[in-house]
Length: 113
Image (cartoon, rainbow, N blue to C red; front, side, top):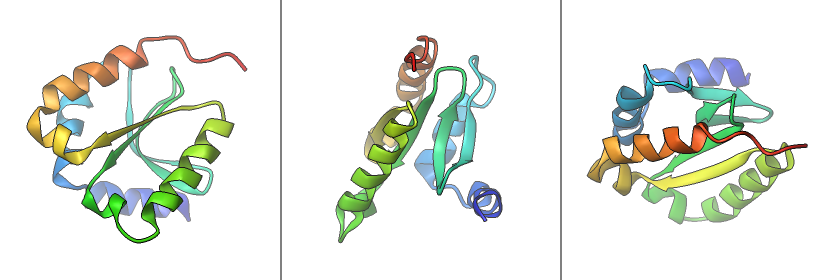
């Protein structure tokens, strides 16, 4: 299910996600977009550093979404991942700067288990 959903989400990425992916796609270390992990599909994932990157648009502030995002973050952190939430407005403002910050974080060794 998650793999099928991830494939579908890759085709309909939001504008901030597409802008960020254009900056990250050929970078080192390697990042994956719309990566399935457990019950979730992460916007971006750096396996070598165990970093999950989530781009949060305005919808993440509405309804029960903040609680769902908190539960998602807690689950991911329980998997010994670092979770980074980036407002979509920041990506739109300067995707290159955001990509550089993500890559710097991904070059840091992952936390020990």
